[in-house]
Length: 69
View: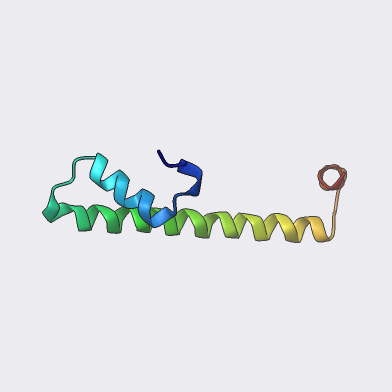
């Protein structure tokens, strides 16, 4: 048995598409849809990480200082 933590995103996307019962003709479309969702989630996470890092670089109030502690 494999450890799910060691499985790459591409393999997991293919497994999800297969487990959802996508037929062979629609499996490629399902994989593309899941990859798009993954890419948009990663982009959203990067944007929020950059915004929080910028706020913490120059704290403006006590709440931001508490985040540093």
